Structure formats: C-alpha cells, structure tokens
Image 1 (cartoon, rainbow, N blue to C red):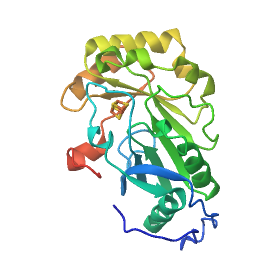
Image 2: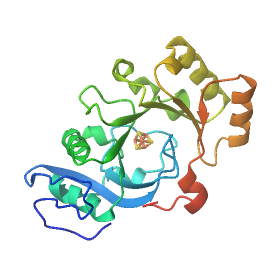
Image 3: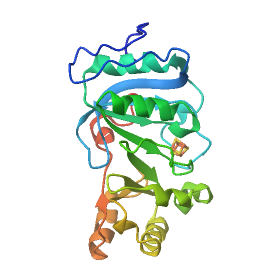
Length: 237
Ligand code: SF4
C-alpha cells in the first residue's frame, strides 16, 4: 500500500491532472492500491496504478484474488485519488474482487476520468455496466461453465459495449474453449469489441490454447498474464 494521505483535495504534482474537489464523506472499501505493469488486455506492459476494491459476490473456481473477498480498509474517495496521484502514472485500472459491487465505484471512475487518467475497469460481467462513465474502458468477463459462475453472466451488458471495451473469456479446458467460440459466434461478439482468450494459470496450457485459436482462425487475442510470468502469484503485483 502507498503511504496514507489525509489531504482533502488533489493537487497532483504532475501538471496534466486537474484539481479534484474533495469527497471526504464518500467512502470505498479498498483491498490494495499498487503500481505494476498491466498484465492483460491491449494495455499489457504499461505501468499502471491498480485500485483493488474489496468484495465479490461470485466464487469462480480459479479465483486468484480470494484475499480481496473480505479484507480491506475504508478510505474516502478523495484519499484514494490522492494515493493514485502519488504514483505519477497515467494509466489506472479499477479491479477487484468485483469493483461494481460497491456503488461508489462509479463516482471513483468518473473522477479519475475528470482528472485526465486513462481508466480501465475490470469486472466479472455479473454487474450492470450501463452507468459506468463512457470514458472508461470496460474489461468485461464472460464466465465460462468451468468457472462455476456462468449463470451469473449479465447478457444485457452486451448492449452497453463500445469499440474501446474488451470482452474476456478465462478458459479452464477445451470444453470452455468450445463454449466460448459458440458464444462468440452466437452473439457476433467480435463485431462489438476486441475479444480476449486467457488460459487459467497453471491449469490450461497456453500453447494448446494458441494452437486451437490458430487452427480455428479465430479473431481473438490470446493473452498470458504478464505479471504472473514476471512475479508469479505474489499479491500486489
Ligand atoms: S469474479 Fe473475479 S474476484 Fe470474483 S470470484 Fe471470480 S475471479 Fe474471483
């Protein structure tokens, strides 16, 4: 975690960010805030500040952030903004857990955009994304059968995608892969936004997934979580 700040307004030392009004009474439960390289999506490799919010209503079989289900500190939105500003990094990712399970997440996203950050949101796909600020890049999971949570997919979210958003399938096995291909074709997902196929770490061989995608000539991006190649499963990375 970054050092605590009690500042009630943000005067980012980096001049590209605007002054933000205080939101001391608005609070979020925050699991961790840290800087790392973005490990996934089209922004892979870019230095990014991650804000991990506490809590998630899902329990995916492969979850790698169970530590975020309960532990966290209540921080004012202005304090969260202040900590982000300290890192002097342009890209910010709000993640979880399931960040949209906290209503004040929408406020945080809007204020981050107002301040000039390039903002992305990682969400499980179970929560309504219709009120997320248009400037935010939404990375929305579509939960597969082997996740154990596919019945929680909120398919209405497909109506709120823009071409800057990305849909992500986290795949456990070949049955998941075949399911994802079928869903992709049924909903014409590749016409909506970029699609990510991600193998579950230490469960599905990424080489095998790459071969299936090439065999089937799929217009998807196969991605391997860069942060896990660099640092394993160390939290805060
Ligand atoms: S949605 Fe994400 S945080 Fe929640 S259980 Fe699934 S993998 Fe874990």
